[in-house]
Amino acid sequence: MIRAYAAQLREGSPSESLVQLRKLIASAYQRFHAMCLDNINVDPAKAEFADGAIVAAALMHRGNAEAYRLGRQISRLAK
Picture 1: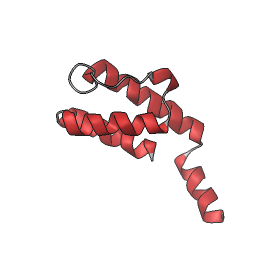
Picture 2: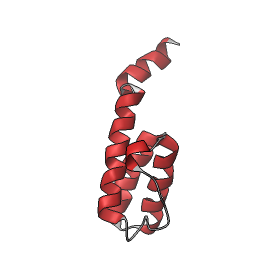
Picture 3: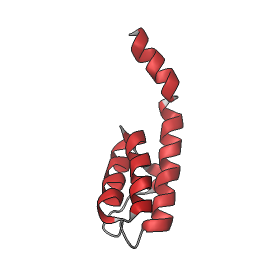
Picture 4: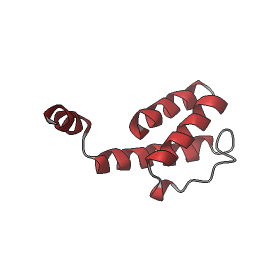
């Protein structure tokens, strides 16, 4: 239990991670909506971790190198 608590402290609270995830999703929609996210409808203001995983997968599979990098960042937060 102590290790799990320490890991949670290192990563930050879930709310901080969620806020950062939502910012990255909003950035992804601004930059890659037409190219990668045209079939995905996620509201960045209400996005959850599962939505982040979907957006990350779309960016990594359908985008260029920059989209792939952003998808990896989102994927790390969504886990």
